[in-house]
Amino acid sequence: MKRPQLPILLCLLGLSSNAQAHLVSTGLGPVYDGLGHFFLSLDTLLPLVALLLLAVPGGVRRGRLGFFITPAAWGMGAMAGMAGDGLGFSAVMSFIPAVVLLMAGSLIALDAQGRLSTFLLAVGAFVLGLAEAGALLGMPNAGRVLLGSFTGLLLIASLVPALALALVQGAAWRRVVLRVGGSWLAGIGLLWLGWLLRQGALA
Amino acid sequence: MLRLRSLLLFLCGLSLALPAAAHTGPAGMANGFLAGLLHPVSGLDHVLAMLAVGLWGAQLGRPALWVLPVAFPLLMAGGGFLGLIGLNLPGVEVGIALSAIVLGLAVLTALRPPLALAALLVGLFALFHGHAHGTELPAGADGLVYSAGFVIATGLLHAVGIGLGLLQRLPHGRLALRGMGAAISLAGLVFLRGAIAG
Image (cartoon, rainbow over all chains, first blue to last red; front, side):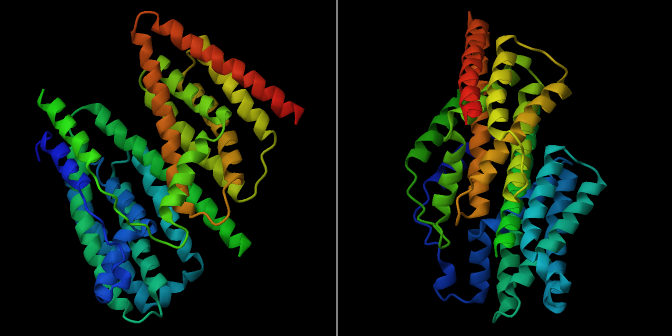
């Protein structure tokens, strides 16, 4: 996409009408529940976006790898969670998204580009899928809800790395912006983790 | 010219945006985010210290220009984490007051330490600021959206400080910057007096 067209695209996004953001309650079915939940839950969306951004510093090739690895690992984690009853991680399930956000944000801030960051991306996606499945265990139509979530994940995985790569190409300051954003994500993850620990202590 | 037109078009489009009405969650995500966004600006001592970080970064130039505003929110989150889990940090209010004094003096004197030392100093003070905020987290807040608003507000305050720091390019700009540093330092003395008095 040419750069002058990007502000126009963002402008069109700014003309959005009301989101009607309660698909979960409109009875469109479990698949749409999963899709809606994915986009409307910041605690599900933000760690995933951070993971996808982790693929960006490595360039186009690693960005493409992130597009394939993230959904695959997430899907495996979700299936493992459904099959294995959370794989015994139920006690720490609620902390996983915060930890993933902290890890991914820190690596983005450090401009990590090697195989280790790709490996950690896969691990992060796997445990996020595991956590998502764990949160839905015991609910009716959990499998279909996860299918909807997976569809949402594919959409995000196709957009986020591509947009981020387009934004960081060119001037060096653009890459700095990504690193600063990564530090913000890490900071959010750390505060969120502390809040969760406090809630756990108070419960 | 094309970029300017695109930017103007974008800004016009933003002004036409309708409310998304996309609030979710019983606590109201929008309220939690706004609460987090406003918290760093709730105290003048916090605001001045964060502005000072941006000013000092602008004075030092690259890479401190972005390293310091990265170190502060990150270490501030660390301090917030400590406050949230109940770990005590002694002399928090004194530390916050000292941050305004020391960072203000750094701007006033255009101090140029090694980058690592500057980042360490900024990070140390950030711990105190974060700890104070972490212990003040309101009950019932949505932790994630609150944290997001909080960190973003902190980063934006640094950006304002950096923006003000660009004044040094103007005639007498460097003097103006040092004047701001002096003002921040003096305010820090007032805060310190208050912190010691109790």
